[in-house]
Amino acid sequence: MPKLIFCWLLTLIPSVPLLLVYFAFRRVLVSKKFEMRMLLERGEALTKYLSAYGGPQQNAGVPSKEAREELIASIVDQIFRLRYSTLEYLPAIAFSMGANSLLMVLVLSFAGVPLGLPLQNVLAGNSYLRDVIAGGVGALIWGTYE
Image 1 (cartoon, rainbow, N blue to C red):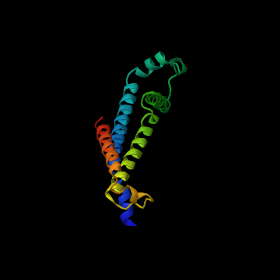
Image 2: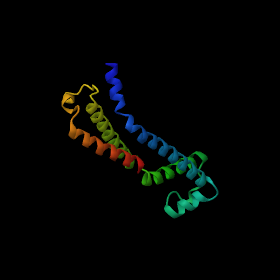
Image 3: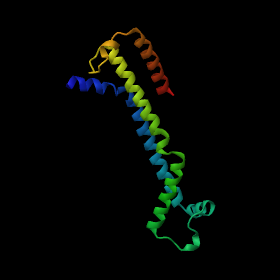
Image 4: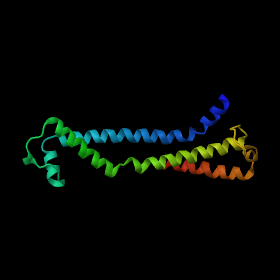
């Protein structure tokens, strides 16, 4: 049983670069959000932004520090939701991880590594499967490069 779990964990190896790209991208987004918040807190940037794009007007009184920070956080979140929505890239990463895992299952089945699949004996050493694997590995390398 531990060997079987280890073999199934091997199927996730090609997906590790995708997860690393995701975490690196999240880190960049968090730093961009922080930078934008700092820009809106400086000088009259918030007032000019609100006068250009709408929102609570200046004549409503001086907002408290907490209300101002909440307003800035709301503006930054709206801007980033428009441009960098999580729904834009998470489905693509999930699909790629699934395709990579399926490719790795085919590779391990072709090599005869036991995964507990019902048709694994049919797949072991199949010459057509070798062509599918070669195409899949080429797509994986190309996709990782891109």
